[in-house]
Length: 108
Picture (cartoon, rainbow, N blue to C red):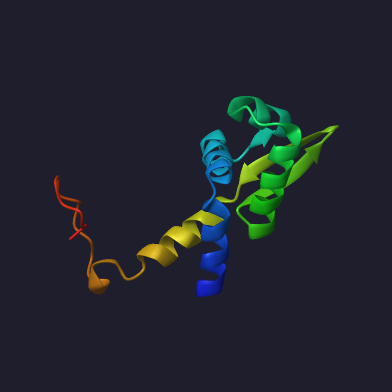
């Protein structure tokens, strides 16, 4: 992953409502959630939700699909995992990480 891509993904998540929507969709699993259910769960107005869904979709963090007259959104786990890999690729100086010790702020 390029720095620019990671920056785009992190910027999309660096907003409280978008982060909440994304975390909800990650929890929902690969099937995702219907737009109305997302709005209900997070108590968001349709216009507000639409704006944030558009931003997450544009960044590549979520994907939408239409079923009948409903639109469902789901987290893109491949993108999430790629970002996590990017953020941790140099963890522990290239050595295998040891389990995090209680009271420690590092993994090594």
